[in-house]
Image 1: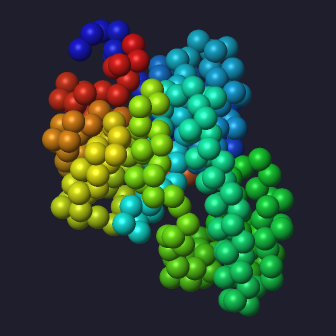
Image 2: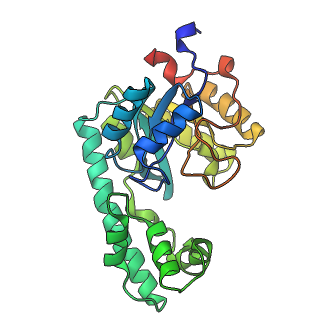
Image 3: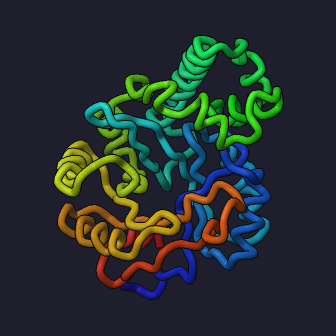
Length: 283
């Protein structure tokens, strides 16, 4: 591998307050610099809104910055996330998908509010929208309201009692099909990476089927590590990246300081020499 392709620390999966992260885009970049990250991407859920701020702060620090976004999709009824990286912020195909997912998120929030009402709670939709502000509306905002109004003592209880999948159902039918998203973005000069593959309810056999479809429809990469992965899981994903000719991506999936392993630029070690790194082509 050319020396220029190597970075001392790379993080291509992080979240700011523009979706469900703890820090603003600027604060997140500052944290990346403190952690000696050399190549950094902001990948908020279904929004590009934080990219200009993050890019400006990265330029002030001299930090190499990559445009990113984590897109919500589904495959065979299973919700999946896909990270798009290194795209132009005015890419019309990507902007169309992001806009569509934002509409879906609003409709999904209305459905969540209706399901909570069926559990005997008041209509929290308008308050959740107001609380979300510039961030992406989701269940954490409803959880915060339930805590604020005294229905539960903390967010974990909110999910256990009201917002978990057993109470709300999976709401799986809302996101666009993976094939639809991939075929729209394939050939658009960006990396299309399957996010955290080991977090989905899939056997290895089903994961291989997913990766076969992902590659067939235009996917280009797989996240071989996302935060504190088990080393054996990372080794498996390294092998699968080679078997399906998918470039390897890495990231912390950092949302905030919520545990000792949660930090920008911090994730289980990979074997760089054994995989084709997604960022090698950008050097």
